Amino acid sequence: MTMFDRRQIFTIAGAAVAMPALVGRAKAQTKITMGVGGKSLLYYLPLTIAERKGFFKDFGLDAEINDFAGGAKSLQALVGGSVDIVAGAYEHTIRMQAKGQDVRAVIEMLRYPTIVIGVKKSLADKIKGPKDFKGLKIGVTAPGSSTYITCVHAMVKAGLKASDASFIGVGGGASAVAAMKKGEIDVISHLDPVIAKLEADEDIVTLVDTRTEKGTFDLFGGTNPASCFYVKQEMIEKSPDTVQAAVNGMYKALRWINKASAEDIAAAVPEQYHLGDKALYMRAVKASQGAYSETGIMASAGMKSVYDMLKALDPELASSTVDVSKTFNSSFAVKAASMVK
Image (cartoon, rainbow, N blue to C red):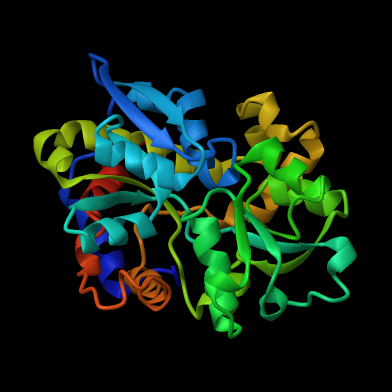
């Protein structure tokens, strides 16, 4: 409970008393299209679990999931209207609000970013931290994605600028592993199981690790909400029941993940997610399992932390004024806690 402020705790508790316990299995299936950028990554594990375990269907949704090459692409799909809801980084809601587009998160998936920055092992004797990244080639899931922003934040904190290095989109999964193994990049800012594979094969030396509370606080100085479900406000207004059903399915997945063993999780995802090594995937799950949200509610201090980071890094946001309370609608996650059994 240390991750949530007192007001949020009272909100959850009050909702649990005020709302009747309902079992959310709808009779009809409503079609919905979801977007994600790198579905096989543990960053988006709750989405895969909700899909594979049938949790969306439990609440009346026929969910089609489109996997894009990075979070920035899935955001574009939402703005363009080709998807209804996105599993993506919370920071995108802030960017959209700053541009006058009312996009809001409706449930938190990850409390910590779980992004790891590692350097090619052969360079580890010279590259000791982000302060040494000048002139290097850095692999990220996609330019503008959360892996990119996190790495730039680490560089700026160390006294460098984003332009001091070259950023290369390497995608998720096997393509990211291959980019490091082939020597196409010097540094990687990425997620599990990609990082776990590179660590196990001793291809990289880890420099920054936000899979844990300590690593997150060391880099950001506090909490930093990461993956979430976000939608346009107009969908919240026009189809609140559909949004609630999606949140219910995600909430049920979070509860399942928090109780499951690493072996259960590895067995639940597609085999290709293991990158050819199921035991390695299980170790990656264990390293990140504590980062998944327990309530689906974002800590307000963490939301402010993300905004402060973006204002410091992005010239387009430097003079912006965003009310972060409008970037997250907690009512759906609160209601899910009373509906999901």
